Length: 83
Image 1 (cartoon, rainbow, N blue to C red):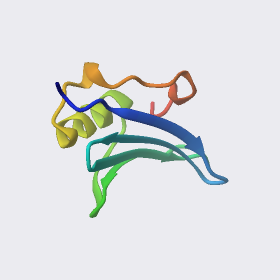
Image 2 (image 1 turned 90 degrees about the horizontal axis):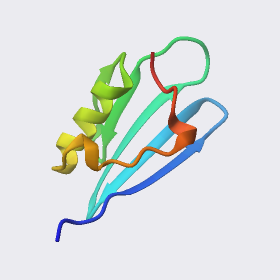
Image 3 (image 1 turned 90 degrees about the vertical axis):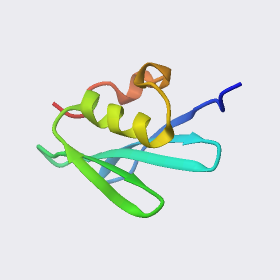
């Protein structure tokens, strides 16, 4: 059985953050709340890439976790991240 993906969403004063965990891997997709900004995909080592589109950011996050993007259950609160 494939490790299940744990998905959490939270907001800070400055950003919206979608955190994805699978086994011992963790990837975040985040975007600033202040106006227009790119989504940042990061793992334990730091920033990996920046994207304008949420779908592209999720594709990269899924690749890092070794799963298909369709296996990521995005919470309703995270809708609207990106353009």
